Amino acid sequence: LNMLLALSPYIENAAPVFVFYDYNITVRESVAIRAGQPVYFGEKKIGTIQSVAQKDTLTILGKMEIDKQFNLYSNIDFFFIQLPDNTTRIEARIDPTREKKLFAGDDVILFLSSK
Image (cartoon, rainbow, N blue to C red; front, side, top):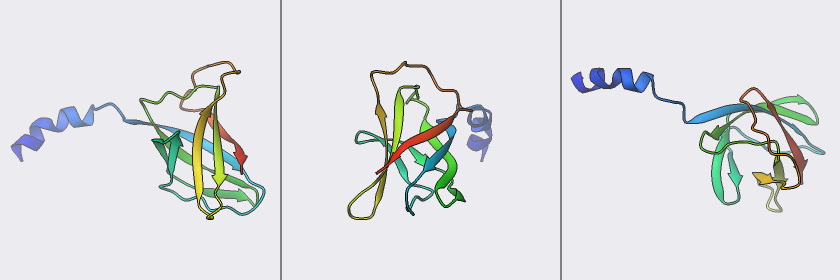
């Protein structure tokens, strides 16, 4: 117990490991997205979907957490991909033709595609 009490000031002041972003996905048909679903950059997991809410029949809103070590820039696109086996994958991809500007945590991430 004494060890835990001695560590508590350090634990309370620890820097957060994730940055939270709001997201918005416009879909063409009903899709299955769930809280806890990973977000990838290539094969590396960079985050997780934290919440899912259906705004209307074609719009899904929520929050996702992204690893603080993975900076989000304006030239990164997020894709919501419906796979042939009826599972889904969320991927971040870089578009090298666009300006690279750092996102703030209060920016809303728009998913550009649902394939």
